[in-house]
Image (tube, rainbow, N blue to C red):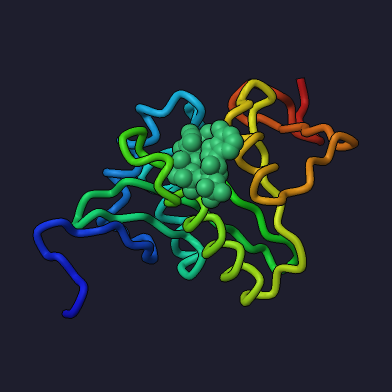
Length: 158
Ligand SMILES: CC(C)(COP(=O)(O)OP(=O)(O)OC[C@H]1O[C@@H](n2cnc3c(N)ncnc32)[C@H](O)[C@@H]1OP(=O)(O)O)[C@@H](O)C(=O)NCCC(=O)NCCS
């Protein structure tokens, strides 16, 4: 194809597939800002993929996985998780491309708004999102319910 140099393939964005999951779990394990999550198992990532086929994207260089973004839509709002680019490939527009394609698909799926969360200490990501025009919501605090931490469910006895 004209203009394409097959000896130096460039990266491309495509839908994530089950065959990418091991590589993405491996990539996340080396990125400190993607801190280990109880949801990061093969099965849970596959479950997210089944529900969000169009908005769970990866960046590939030839067959090498170099970036991810998980876009979820629950029929009401969109949420983005695990935007990550392999450290060797940052600063080339891959993070922007993943994020912009993901929010475009979430909008097509019906999301009127998309939210995402960063660790308060992740100033790099915050600077990146501000640069890309995301609105920082200082009025919001995040709460989580961790089933694994022996918290009682409503109605539990003892
Ligand atoms: C955040 C991250 C995804 C950015 O990916 P990237 O591929 O390096 O970003 P891009 O090259 O697409 O940068 C897009 C734009 O943001 C800017 N940018 C990137 N990092 C930035 C930073 N730390 N501060 C300010 N601007 C930044 C770039 O200059 C670029 O601007 P331009 O398009 O005007 O040239 C990447 O640094 C990463 O994987 N970080 C670790 C994981 C992480 O923290 N993810 C977020 C979890 S919430």
